[in-house]
Length: 497
Image (cartoon, rainbow, N blue to C red):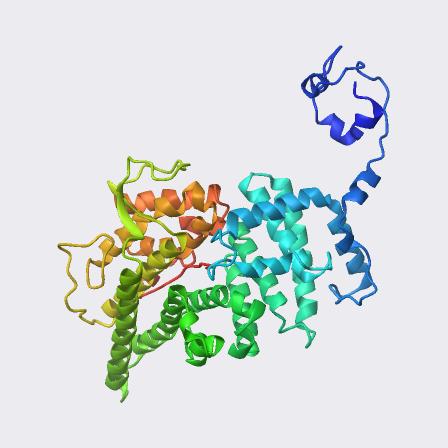
């Protein structure tokens, strides 16, 4: 048996298999086995864990922001922090960031998720930032690896994070801090993973919208607020799409003030988000027009203005696509499905397509698949308004499709042909994360029970089983229980970019 200095605690030792006269544990470890001991032996490992705790966990002379509503709850939160050894929690956090938040390998890139750094510099282990991170990291690790005990542990920490969130929202000095937005983002993603309630993720997104609107665009010109803006705009706009309610981000100030004096620094993603933020208001007005009594004066004028606005947004989206094509002419290309393009191909359900669309840059891939999703929403809304979109051709198509090419089904299939790239190992789970919104839109625009639709259902299951996003399953999609919602122009989905 192992000597005292190398032995493990009794609890840990019980889970390892031992034989007689030599235990396999010692054989594998290269130790001289002293035989199977017949008496219990206590080994104190408390000091070992305490020594590993970082210095920043020690009490500080600086006052701390209250993280719970009572000293009893604070003690409970600190106890939760001590449940997991720091090295184990660090593994969960590192896994989360590497799998989910690494959208661009270059940290200096404007597409990098630089706001994640705020989660590492928190000095309060029981504060909202660290608690929300711990909840998401523990739950996500447990979900991906099928560890239900970790998911339960993450649920307990998630409950603590909600308590801390309520306390911080009651503090005028803390309610508008950007750290709060980061914490709510983590809580929202937690709900996309666990789906404890069908609309809990949407409630977090609505909370982001309210706080961001109160902060105003001037608070997002520099620092963490600026780094958060692309993610915030996507989450908020998608939440408004689901509810079909106008989004405050359509105001011109939110499209200019954060980049005041440096408009040339706006990325293609930023410009695409400008279009995205205009669409929820269009859907809201479309619903109004649909239920408006034809005998009420002004309906015809309202519909004419609505159609004109739709054409204006569609033209802006087409202009974005042409500029994207000019700026990145060779970033997307067609590739035979049977040729492995990725060095580490992921096993996926058998594809019904002979060729797929591959990319040289993950950011370009996210932009193009989002463009297709927005295009589908606009074209479906135009159908609802009985508008005729001229020059929509279905022959001599480019690959990928250019503006005014392809039918609604062609565009939905193009989204499907980008799935392989997003789910390959080089993208880790961030590619699956970016697929949540486009796949939802594509599925609703494919013929029911078609080969492509059935394949897409299998892909959605892969996103849930392998990459952890339970909301991606077809039966869990928002609005999946309301089939007529699609025919009425319904749009539901979610994405964090």
